Length: 135
Image (tube, rainbow, N blue to C red):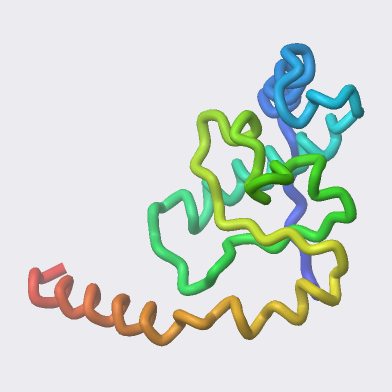
């Protein structure tokens, strides 16, 4: 929390979200102006896909992103709590947890690494295989 990465939106993302709105796809089915929220989520999803998640690596965490928002219905399906599929078109979905208060996100830290030991063992085994192959 002491440093931040600024992620700029681009024209392609704006056009993508505008087309969702024009075609009344989620999250624009209720005539509510969700443009900014949809653009933020699309931008974050694309950024996450370009980073660690985009490399096809597994993560030791339950979630790749904890998103703090008072309006999760602006970007998630209330029946599944998943990001609207329309927003995910053309990109890999990420493991997302939505909370409504920052304190909730901070308190989630211990559960984020519950499979960390298994992940470390898996990574060590892959490293050993690479050494055996001469990589």
